[in-house]
Length: 166
Image (tube, rainbow, N blue to C red; front, side, top):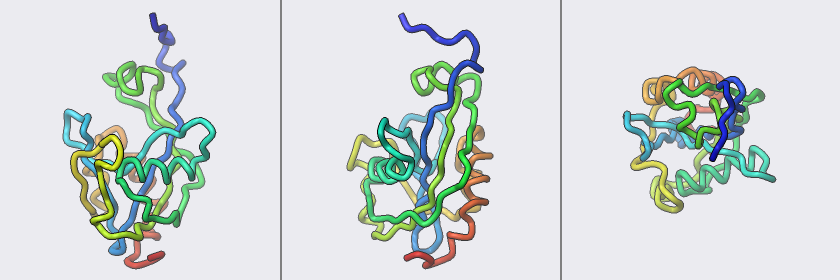
């Protein structure tokens, strides 16, 4: 029998990374999650594996979720960002082990072509994907991650200039 902490406050945050992938036009890659009951698009993100540093995790997550490694890191947020899960997801998401996530975000410049993105290269997490303008991101993400996305946009807005880093 699995034992759970008595208080949500006793649960830790899941350490993970997030990836803002920019194309040559300064648009951001987003995928539509397969496991959501509400329509939600998001940037690639995921847990940091044991023995992995955040930079390695960011590149691995991009390869797993977008099916490409044709990118270079052009920015890294100095601080980690945390967010709490909404009450109805605590005890459900992340196998009930975490109250939210503690994320290190990276900005990557996509060096490939759209055909280099393959959502089925690994176990699929997204049903479809598209490029969107950065300012549209907060309206696409589930509400409890909106503040995180606003902080990521503020940190990387200057890197989204067309062609920069390409």
